[in-house]
Image (cartoon, one colour):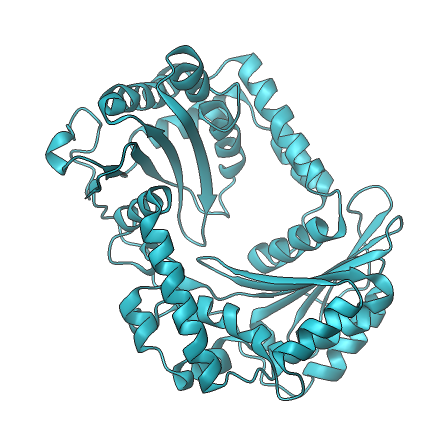
Length: 436
């Protein structure tokens, strides 16, 4: 990203500005003329896929620890300072990045920047805090293992990317979390949490120059660092992952390899996802739930990473209905590849995606999130009009092209319920022959 002064347009009454600061931090701001709040996010370009196996869960560990205090502030002092001004703070970890954010009244912008800058520059990472949060995270891992819907999603990722960090859960494993030490966490922080791997996004009632000056004063002397080197994804998949559990309902996820977040086909994949299972009028929702009553919940989703991506279909159904649900799902995937979608389905999907984009811009927090993730992942600030233009440009031929590629893509079926792997016909589900 080359330095530039505020320019560009986001939506009515807004102006987007991006700048590469001397420290190496990429700054993006969106001034909103009609609000009195401000949202501030620090986006770190490191997530669970960037962890060695012995440190699996380190990014999520840091998400828990950074708000536990700094050399200048205790955790209680941070909480009290934000409570006093009615502020809100939180953090989350993904496969490829970690984010920390606050939202408060714009008059308290300096406080928000100071607190986030403090925890990103000089977290305490005390041994006693590491030990305390270790117990919390181990409980979190057990909670996810007890929830079949979470477990089946984890199994699907493990099968789609076997032996690769993308296949691991962001929480890590119980074994890795027990083994991580305070020194490990400190070294991981010092390696990855550097200005060259950080995007700061601010949206709301703010002035770009004020934010840039505040960040320059705080981060000017740190080594810049950069984005992590990433292990490429192999071609192999595990076609079937079954976990026997004495549940009343069967939980299923069929996941298929797809395109990366940089592919121009991602826009057509977005349309295809809405048609397949992304809405109330989608084919799967109508056929599985509305017409046949086979599942309370059925959905599809898509996600893009640095070098790969996936489309998944998930469902919860009675064990005796598993075969029928899976036949409908695979049949619809094959039908989309053979016949494409209708003009009406295209119009509905585009309208759905357009509204999703516009509704996501209703407050400063959502604008901050959109802006931060855009600059972090694409090294540019996508405007609303650009995104809407890409969606509108998708045509029937583009959707059928991605449907054809999806129908023959490597896939994995994950299932949790009262059955074993022998209960599934891999050939009938199109799993055979897709392991490499």
